[in-house]
Length: 489
Image (cartoon, rainbow, N blue to C red; front, side, top):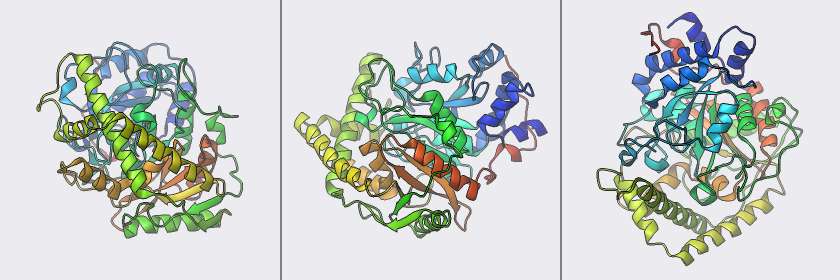
């Protein structure tokens, strides 16, 4: 790898875009360099599973719209993100040979921002796991320790960003799927407010309202700039949050003021917290105090049984609907070789749920959401661990015996991330802590509904106080000495 290519792997998206604006590099050169980084590092990581290089290089060579991110290479998650003429598999053999006919709204906005999409990243089948080990593509490996998972479901995106392949990568989050891999891989993972980023035209409510789309990033400012490019309703969207008074990027570096921060050192549903995860929360709380914030131990009182039951009901119903929708679109029924056992098990459970049981679950979610809303009248931000355990070992998430066991295992690992999906609030995982073995341990900040601005101001303040962008994992493009050149065809 050339020195310039190695240096590019250390630059965030806004800095790479600056090189383009000031004519120090072209979009084609940035795209080629990123393709070289994929070739150099991804044999160890398995983060990029679908190649879109030909289309990317064609797009990079042509005129691109101007903007803060114009010319920056990026990757789409292999889940959603429809791109006209490009394959998509959702991590499943069921979609072998499937090609999208039209761009979704999010991809149209990425193109309008001048981003160049190089390919698609690894994800568990239909996003149904907190690790990324689909049968179709095999496990995605953590750049900090390849024996460990990247988390899921945006695991390939997090690995690609952590390894310096691209500075930002598309992700989605229905139960923590941006924040979980952000914690595992030591990057920034913001889950925006429900409705902040349009799901048009194919979805009204991804995962019945739990799901949102955004990016994994190395820096807070990149996450903010990407949200500026993504945010806003499309015609016919069922709901959308109040529009911000200022750009999200302008919030980065703005004084957050003295915030009331509620700190929870225990999980809301009683799952044990690994000592390293508890230490990360305590360390972050002390840092917040030194920055002048009012930090108190507090957490909402919730009905854990009702919430976890409702989460499982909604998730299995959504899995059943999603599988049926794909079968209808493809014109065939999924067989044992088409989908994994977990997908079949969750879909079967979802088909057993009655309409009244589903509406009961939605009612339970509404009641608990109001409790959480009242709690946030007493604080500005809640601080928790992102995960309850260290990044899982590859292979640790083998198929459970039942749907109940699936959700019990998942909640024990990452149940804290569920809350913001169920309530629609914004939440961000920040890489503020590494343990004695050199593994990143994320902490989560959750804000009030539609208050991403507060989270971005606070996250930027924490990033300035405890910079993480120069924390480079053992598997990183800047560490690669030799690289076979990738030639455009």
